[in-house]
Image (cartoon, rainbow, N blue to C red; front, side, top):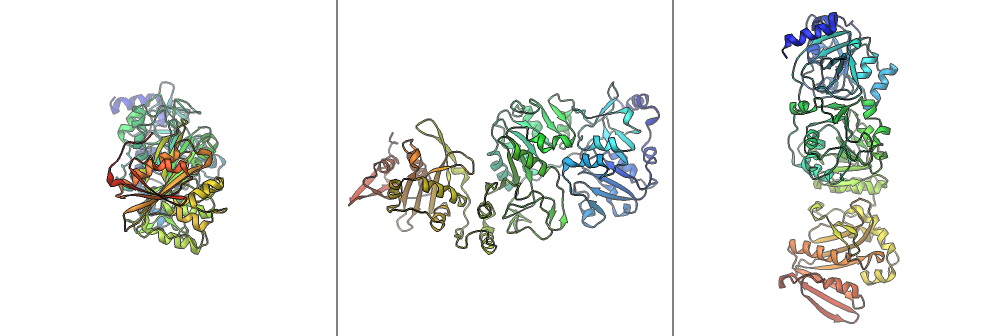
Length: 631
């Protein structure tokens, strides 16, 4: 349909309400507060009209969330005409806020509509971009519903930019022509969200997060490269759902492939629920009248009580800095405001209340080309806490994922140090000691700063048909090993340690947990992938650099013996040692410990035995060649 035909149809529908941009702008009085549509739905034609040289405006406040495209109203030359109030700071207004030429209102995204309705945030004029009206006179808010309905309700003047290129979106919020005081026709392509630059750490973070997302989960994805990158690693999942403030390119692709279908959602099943969309033109085209997708106002989508009604809710958000106690800064770099609170806390709290929910904060381990650690002993001076240490659950960097919820400060600090960049771990440990967050005798990390070997993780079947998760030990496993020790019988303790032991102090436990994953290795058997899952067995080796042989040892919880867990640990430890160039194993086993002797016998290699009193010395040489696994 040509612009002339569209204008003719709009003239018939709107009558005298259809005006030129300059005529619409003249209806705004100096001093009035203007709400501007956000993101990809910023009314670009009206914005140009606001900054036109002949626009009769002065001392007007323009408020909005993040907008894509230019922001001419924050140019220094516009300072006497406009004052911007950023409800979320985008890149196009960041300098103005930093220089004090614009304001920033820290606020939860879910609460903005309520603040407008209460008058706490005054809206005199609402300027929104919408579709042409349908046969019943309703326009769609298109890609951005978010706060627009509340702004329209409270404004005394509603100016609608009619954009024929705006996709029609389903949902409860529509704008009727009777609510519009002035309409302007402004056909233009929607501004697109630039694709973030590919980074190795972003991909690694996304892989860790993907490992936390089960089939049937419902997802929220915040703004940034990490949330969208996660979607690339979910193509093998089934029946995922979406309940999110922001809908992006990756969501559309997984809907097309059937990965996202909403089949398991407990709220709005079979529907994708969002509040706004920012992405590429192909995503905007995909969105148009799609029957599965609904956009709702942000005070509904981001309401933590609504979010929590989605079982297995996984919320993925990013931040700028995390301190060792778990405080999360997301909106500022020191005292300089950078972005905003947005919907992070809304979804962190909603996911935390969800049955099976997982709130996740993602952060690269470093900034400024690797010279600054984003995990810090304490937040920078002036840095704002967006997600409190009481709200935080999962924190993920490219070096791993840890769940801080319910942990002591000592455990939190050690957990975060394990996922910090290796070159900053010794400094963080020293600072944690100085601040008395951790034990003063906590072992320093190995000199070469090991990386947690996520590739060693695997799931095995036990003889009784159950599953066990095998993984490398972590410094944060101290409590889990401690608990397992106190479940062991005295016989099992004696067989493992060759001594009568009634306690397992921190000084000894931490030596089991703090290893280099090279000369030393410990594999634990856990009841599940959960960070706090019960440890029911562990197997370890330590290499003698002179001989190239490693001394190996095993122990399995008495309640889990006889299920093949010891054999599985032995085989896994052997595979790892062989792959790392270890020449073989040595071990000391009590002659009475028939179970452990049988486990070593199933390593897959010939076993030499030498008896000495009540002890049997074992030597297993990998160089002699692998024999068939013994049943």
